[in-house]
Image (cartoon, rainbow, N blue to C red; front, side):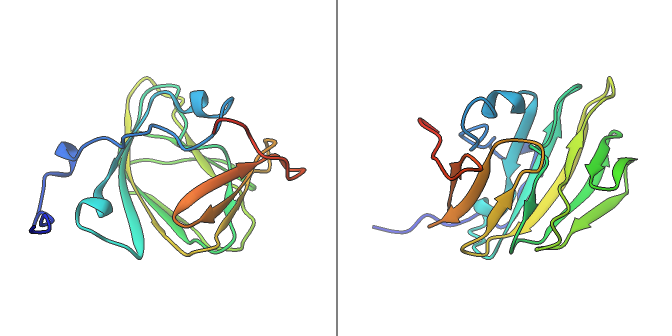
Length: 162
């Protein structure tokens, strides 16, 4: 049996949406309504880093505010004007702007679309095994185990059904 080949090139907006809209357990998963991710890196078989084309509808957020222990992250705004929420406060972004989040900095970050227009951006992050995510505003923590996020409350007790 022949292994399916990855495409040579695609139109990014034609990439399939991520099958599971959010990896978060409830009550956090439902907070990601209006966020649509198209995993681009996976289509090409990339293993060391991920690339997503992400769309935020008006009122949507990119994620819970979080910081990674070993994963660097980078975003590049293509369309719309989201607000970047970090430990420094709120920063207005526009197309052509970018931001990076160094692993281990502890600086929680997320994008918020407070406008009436959709926001489209690229997000890039590495896939370092053993990464952990801290969420300063919510009772949740995460660890990357065998390529999947495992979530727990801040006291270490697991979330059920996540």
